[in-house]
Image 1 (cartoon, rainbow, N blue to C red):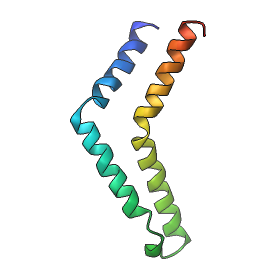
Image 2: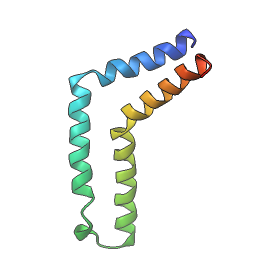
Image 3: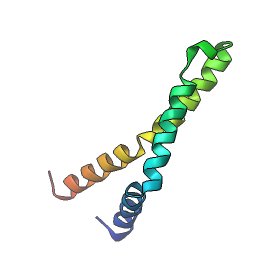
Image 4: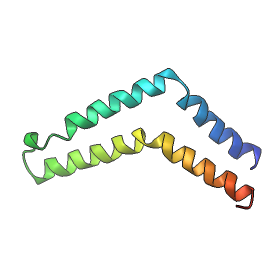
Length: 81
């Protein structure tokens, strides 16, 4: 793995080890629960907006796992596994 790629992942790992990151993820999960209330839907357009919001929140909540998986795959590929 080249130095630039290693630095890229290390910056993410530093972020994920920060208490602020953990707090943000918990807040995002709460927001997702609130947005995911179908009783508040007015129409199909409102549903599509909420769906988009949930997709964005999910990508942020799952960012740590996504980065960890990509890093693990890269390490395995570098080892020839």
